[in-house]
Length: 226
Ligand code: HEM
Image (cartoon, rainbow, N blue to C red; front, side):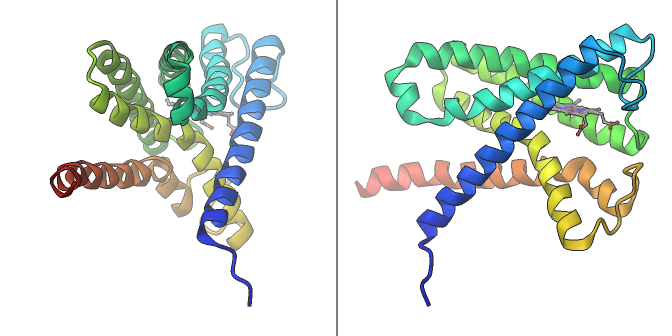
């Protein structure tokens, strides 16, 4: 039987993730723009009637979150970084600023309205926003200090956090396809939902830390064998 080579499978996986990411980014930007322009109180609980600051926080976080999700893959392409360093710097600043406003918008919404499922989900999402703020500050600070190895590590952490929002939806899509939503409720307070409060970023950050640790250990080994 013909087997698809692993490399092709990896490219297919990346292409699928890119399509899903762009689709979700467009959805988030559209949702955010409608929330800022229209009264969506009949459509979503995320809209607060007469609550301009809360609406500004949650809907602008969607617009900026969608924008940085669309932009962030560009930063990972080595050829773009090498050939167009100015573009890398400008896009990087836009992403860092966008990530800060996205995180602050999400945190502002949690502080003013709270999430649909209450304190546990508030805590999981607040930690998510807090980590995004820390990563964005570190990326900028280390680039300015010329500490490029550490800048790269924080940029990868920020990347994982930015696509976390997409991963959250992908977990749900896969789970509903496989189990028809076992352990998940419309109020997002079932056992499956409760795991998701952190499962869309913590395991991926942990995997990244392991990979970074191995890559750091490999550098002296490669240098001494070369
Ligand atoms: C990284 C890019 C992000 C994008 C594209 C994004 C997008 C969205 C979208 C579209 C929604 C509406 C729900 C839906 O239709 O699925 C939403 C809800 C929400 N987001 Fe984000 N988001 C991002 C990052 C963040 C961050 C960093 C926080 C952290 C504080 C956050 C906190 C929230 C909260 C609290 C809700 C409402 C949850 C609820 O009660 O239903 N988001 N986000």
